[in-house]
Length: 385
Image (cartoon, rainbow, N blue to C red):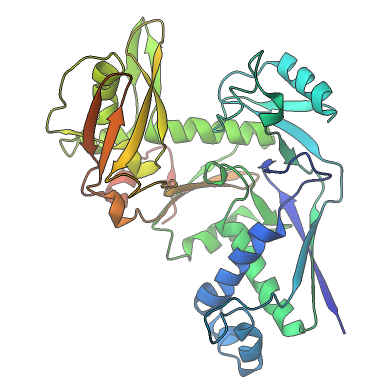
């Protein structure tokens, strides 16, 4: 006999789906199920010890664990995410949004109306949106106004009990799809309040520090625009005032208090402008601690703005290929949560080679970082944990 359960969930922000052109793209079971499995095998004991140690659930929990040879077992349940309304389409861009672009893309793909997400944390649409850009490389984000349905089915009702227990926590702990650390692809169980979400987040020992802010405009595009603005203030915010470069960054301020200078000024002055100056002993690759990219655009500290491409690779090469941001921005409809996760030790005191058009330079990341001290600088966030 097959047992079936359904769970309604609501979408908070658009999802950037790697197969967005398929019919009704949605939250993928292949992304959700591994997180459910991890929760049941690693977190359930902390969240509900009586359930985890209940003798009636021993066999059900075993179905989520590797077999005696260490191999994954066949999934003991099926999960489908079912939309209950037509998709709405969003075009995320890193700068200003031109409605003409939306109209062009709508006609190209036949999607219907497209809403722009200006000043977002998604940069990959810049090249495809150019006049001669490859439009097939564009990524739209999908959003459903009506609650979606998670449909669970299994021959074992106790397996479904475990999955039902896991889903609210998994949705609280994670966003989904591309650029999930920057707030894209946020879903929550229908009816979960911000206070319930806060409680789930605060109880997670992997979340070292948590701050929150109110959201005044719950439109999906406004939430993501707010997230990018807040994140830039944390990691890096660069602009021009009266023809001069201006910087404002909590990360920069934190390390300045430690007598450490971030790399941006040196790279912009020396590598981007192809000069030969060497960095002083205080200069470190500071921004890497909030996420590692292989390529950065560095302003040449000139006006009007002119940028140079700088490639960055670890030393020795490929020791550190990618490092996702330890900061997770989790939005609900009325509140935004800033979540700090551990920075891997391999990222502290690590060496990286910066290469411009003609010059190269090794820089190290700082050897120490303290989340408690950093969060003390965040005076626009209410501290939760």
